[in-house]
Image 1 (cartoon, rainbow, N blue to C red):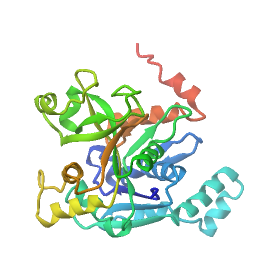
Image 2 (image 1 turned 30 degrees about the horizontal axis):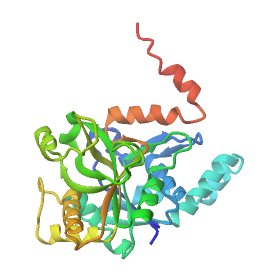
Image 3 (image 1 turned 180 degrees about the vertical axis):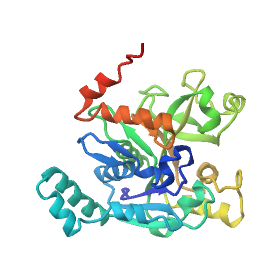
Length: 323
């Protein structure tokens, strides 16, 4: 079954981006996209999903948090039509938002009980279909001619079946802040750490120590001192909800929260034992930007600016002229 649904989580508080996030969600922070239009981050993510063939999108928000998103993703009012009718490009952008709004549903996370708990709220909406899972504060860039990360994930899932986690290469110094996977490469014609390589997952652990990573999580063929780590996009079969439900029903928490990685560990355990669907990974040919951190948000502004119609101007002002 091809993947036609996506879930985007947008229930976080955005504390690292305070005070900018005092009045707006971090997912509404703006970037200039490749078409030269200034858009909230979540719109860029939604449009990437639709461009990859996704037909329906569910945004998971905090309790009472639908308002800002519904206000953005909606059709023009009559007054707005009058304002923009002589600005064809912007008028078309507004019409597009109305069309996009028909593809979006919302569910609320009743309490801030972790990433896994937020994902679980989309269980009924997803039903018995596979779905792409994205973070509402992560954006991505690819080189010219390379498919979007969402499209790359769907291609691998269509070929292999089961769930797929996107990975990238991170140095040992970063393993304690991310999820780390030990994998077995499937394609002998590609290097173990080459973009496009797909894998069978053999083990995964959230935020291991460097000693733990060296002892149990290094993938053969990956250069020393580097590990396959979470990229921030997953494509899951509905079986992930059984795993997350088990955690919630039995109050199995990590640092007082229901973690997605704990659900992934159970999903992998079932896959390896033959009681669940296959669970693999793919090395995504893309770069990731977490706009929930001030320094990375600044980097993302530059990265997106350099692929926009204003690239030459961005280059001219990013040269360090400090005395």
